[in-house]
Amino acid sequence: MTACTALIAEDEPLLAAHLQAELARLWPELRVVASVTHGAAAVEQALALRPELLFLDIRMPGMTGLEAAQALVEDWPDGVAPPLMVFVTAYDEYALKAFEVAVVDYVLKPVQTERLAQTCTRLRAALAQRAAGSAGGATIDAALGQLRSLLGAPGFGAASAPKLTVIQAGVGAAIHMVPVDEVVYFEAADKYVRVITADREHLIRTSLRDLLPQLDAQRFWQVHRGTVVRADAIVTAVREESGKVTLTLRGRPEKLGVSRLYAQLFKAM
Amino acid sequence: MTASASPGKRPERSAAHRFVLRGARSALLGVAIALVFSFGFDQRLTHALAYSVPISLGCWFFIDSGRLLAARWVHRGAALPRAQWPGWPWMAATIVLGTLLGYSVGRAVGGLLTGANDPGPFVGPSGHDAAMLLFALVPGLVATYYYYARERLAATEARAQAAQRQATEMQLRLLESQLEPHMLFNTLANLRVLIALDPPRAQAMLDQLIAFLRATLTASRAAQHALSTEFARLADYLALMQVRMAARLQIRLDLPDPLATLTVPPLLLQPLVENAVKHGLEPKVEGGRIEVDARREGDLLVLRVRDTGVGLGASAGEGTAFGLVQVRERLATLYGNRASFTLDAADDAEGGTLATVRLPITP
Image: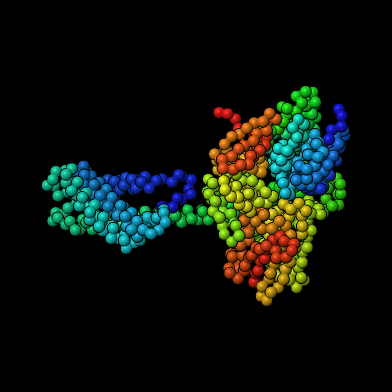
């Protein structure tokens, strides 16, 4: 087997060093191309270095491991197999057990050598299978499916909260009351969210992550990690040859891209 | 008598169900009275039953519904579920009126059952209706008092149980928040690595973990400890966090010597320091600094926990509120309005959050 590449994302330096040392012992041919300490760096480095394996701590400053995984899957270039992901977490609040026998593995901290050896065996088998044929097409679908159910799993932002009927947006000294029925879509902009109606747009000081549980999931669909659209404001969803889905909207000229994670929402009945 | 749901093991019966049950008991009381009359005063049992059961039921019906109506009137402005006890003056009037009505109706029914002209077994030879009426008041009074006492006991018990449950829940949540699994397992993961890498440091870390765990588990037992002990426990906790966060966490603890022997409730500042780490510094990629200091302002001891983290509002985790509520409640219970707690944005260029506790200095 040729040298295989991996990226480690872990905010605690001792644990990152230890994981790297253990991997070096269990899997000498494995080359760790980068070790990063937060989610955004993981996405950036993974896109740049395209490692085959990714060890992601779930709780990291800024972007969590799960959010980094989502961003990576969405931004990964077409035609290249995405990295196999292993989540590392101190406490299994996401019921990751479901993924133990899957392409996406998970390891609990403190990481035990035998458990890590098992993960390595599993990853080797998955890489061998990938090399033997299937060219990544099937595996990206599998990874997408798992990530989808993981993101929808209880404990990951899906917690129910009282639903908003009005968005209160501050404009100077005034508070504009924007009924959610008038919102065409929400777009994440750094620490803010842009609230776009047919004729205006407002900025509200909240993150999309915090806003999402307060929206009715039947009416407001997440179509990208940074975009949530009111379903009945969508006129058409067009699938291009590359598989990319684009939305046209009622009352807005711009088109919105749907990430491959959410493309399956748009199918003819 | 309250309608508040009691948290007993039995499922709570509906109001209508309980009303009918009281009626059935009254009918039984009527049967018992008939038995006494039939054997004690040599009346025919069927005859006695025909009068005593309708009279009992009549008295019960008018007294019990009278009570509910009176209670509804008395508590008409109150929130639901309303109390079902109108108070003794109203109740006395209800009993007298209810007995009068119940007795008359019951006697009429008894008359219909046995033949219209029969005066009934409870009318003495000279027709002392008034005496019988007075006699009929007794079961109504006794039964009312019995239910009153029983419901009051149940309500008291329910309140005591609820208070107990609340206290236990609070304690559990306190422990849970302090022994947060992420903190614990991440600390153990670091310890596991250090054991091979740097045994003396691993040992020091284990000692800090032991001190932290011991302090957490016994905090609820001791009423007060020295401020120097409080700072030592905070130092243990922060040292544990520093192994994990390395350069991302800088610590500055400042306790002036003259204040070291003053006493404070154990681990009062712990939730504030934890919040500063968890919600201030952990989410911040580059990390920052935590400062804990103590000062004297006249008769007040001022304790401050400041971080240079992401600041208020940036991270609204659920854990935050609980830690703050806990600090507020402890201060209110121990010092009333002589202590205060504030949480503000730090007012300098470095940003972050500043938590301030003010306590009266106890000699």
